[in-house]
Length: 188
Image (tube, rainbow, N blue to C red; front, side, top):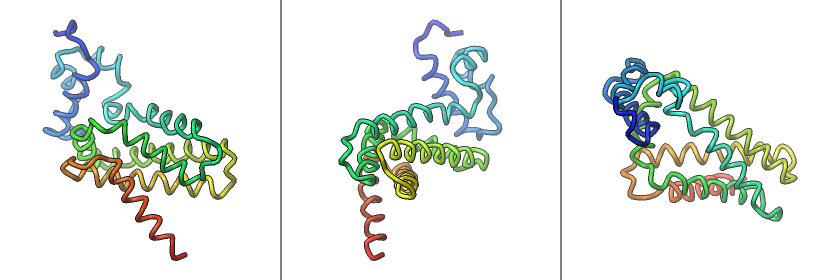
């Protein structure tokens, strides 16, 4: 086994994504992922709780990025401007990850259980954003509405970006989707 090779986590991620794409998520075992990466099953479990976490392992870091960005903004920034700025910061984290994000999205989209988990993770992000807005003094229902709208913008933008060739970055899709949301609500 190639334990001495660096980046075990990255190798496991790459092996898992290859196998999920080739064989499907359900048909892929942890043992197969570990073997493809040149590692042991035990090493896999040092990095991931289960095979789903290869796809969702970055969720807590993403939630922290949302929360930290919101917390660092001046108090005079309006709720939707704060959400937009936060989405821009999040988009920057995906700048070099289009190929992985595209592959991940295809795996998630092909599996009902994974789609449900994705929705649960997005709901958790929405809660974190609403909490961050409340800490900024935003009252209800504005905090929940801004958070839900922001996460909807993120979801739609992310799906459009991963369906694209990747020539345009996620930030561009976020700006376009925010503009669409603004246009939709302008006539109300």
